[in-house]
Image (cartoon, rainbow over all chains, first blue to last red):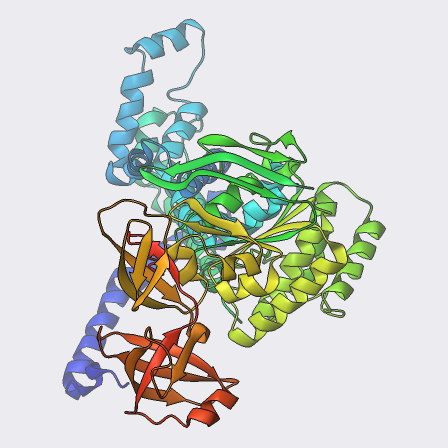
Length: 284
Length: 355
């Protein structure tokens, strides 16, 4: 079957192609090149020293820590939620599915504000925490909490369709063969959903590292203490240190390309998993 | 190990899948649960395995109540219609799984798995993955995997349902031989009456969650207790008639019918299998039915003749031996007479098989 699109006049095709090219160059390529240009404007040594700044290094460390916490929490939650939703019927199931998606439909700034209001000094919970000298808001726990909330759906969303496609039969087989529930999960379920989990983790990581809005609200803006990478960029930029700001931004750029590369590989494996699960039963 | 199922009921929402079923599977026998789709046979099998919790009733194995024993402690081997092999494990790892989760030593696992690989005639396939096997090979691996756990009871859910006709035929003969060799108590679910009649020691016919009849293949085929069993186990011809005061008149013949001793008449149906019909050129006796030959299929061990009855405008099938056919030399369009040698008469009700 030849596609009907080929029958469009040559100038229409060329015009569409040109439009797409212009779009990509103006909106994607030029800003990216600009990031690199600004980052290296004062030479490689200035670039290196911008990244070696004590506060910047701390921001990188803080971002890494927060991303690690969010991924760990959301992987455990995501697999558990996908397991519950994918394998069992229970009342409130559709409500749970809707709730998993909630962070997608709430602006990150609002999510941050919700935390400020619920665990801030004015709230009951905040007072209780304050009485015990537990610092949550304007500290690492608060930043991690806000990030966990914002990245909440990623793993669950990716694992759920794989879980549903793979079905129950292999697990039932394992149970009748004498495997304990934990052995079944570890030896059968986990290998089957592996690529879904890895894909979700990747998306979750990327989102956690790049988060700005929610983190901005709960961090309190203590320089060198609660600044994550994205907050650090903003601070430097506002302080007319644009070269240093762009140097950190170039790290994001690098991360984006790494993520894209890994994503491509995982997506192929994930599709293969689902395809095999759907076909799996028939003859080869 | 014998299995006793007592008054078992399982519902899914409002649908009653299994409705007060009581059956016994004697130790060492191969029993078929036979019925149309959605008759509850698979649900019953899953309850025996412990994969479903019954709403009421008990499951006994060797007289011991296992109704609430988890599946993994029941010692059942379960073979799924779609094999359910572990996709990320090799054939050998699949077969060795039950021993691995029990913490058996590596050498033992390998030895037993290789032995089973020989039993299913897949020597040299141990390192392959399930996706590299044909459907028939996969099902044999699934069976070996179930046997590796040394089950007390083997349960098979439409084990050959996903295979093509030729492989299915081979595998069911192989299963029969295998069962004769290892004689582990086995229950298999099927909707294919031919399969059940060929393979099983005993058959339990199910319909709408209930047991219609239970017995040896011969008993069920020769002495069906309900129209459902009669029609489900093979081709039938139906003759309509009526019964009153302990007598039934069907196809021009009056017979004793103690099932309906009442004075008022009721509609009945008489069933005869195609091989139970005789064809004559002249009315042999007064109960002979006039008919016209519509179609003759002489290709096969028996000759299949389709006839149209004059009085009822119904079509009947008769199977003749080749000798009888050569004697008669039937041609389409010829007028002949049909005599049912045997009629099984049942009072009319709605219990027709749908599948």
